[in-house]
Length: 124
Figure 1 (cartoon, one colour):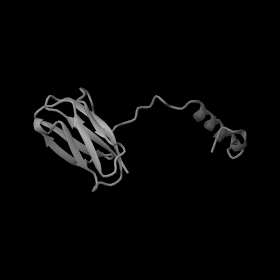
Figure 2 (cartoon, one colour; figure 1 turned 180 degrees about the vertical axis):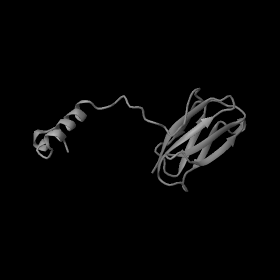
Figure 3 (cartoon, helix red, strand yellow; figure 1 turned 90 degrees about the vertical axis):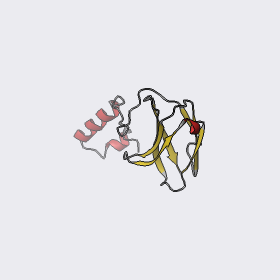
Figure 4 (cartoon, helix red, strand yellow; figure 1 turned 30 degrees about the horizontal axis):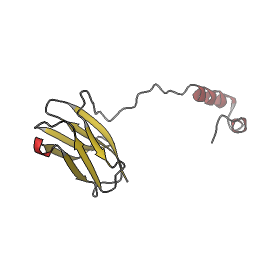
């Protein structure tokens, strides 16, 4: 519904109409969007595909370090899958998502040297 059209303005009181005009004219695009407490400072590059995914995600790493970890985190911040990685595993990894609920997740990759990266994953 387009609340800015004059026809729609008849459903509001004068006070509500003024408030609605103020909201429509001053949308707060500067508000930050929290990411469930995940921080990313130094980036460890990795690529994932396909995204959105159905049953399987392929993860390709650019940085090979010994003690790295990978975590799949749901939107509430709960870690639903994690794996400790060594340098032998850091080329390509396949993650089966068949047992995970469909939705939005965050895949976090952190290296031993504290390089960190988080990517959004959509499961359908």
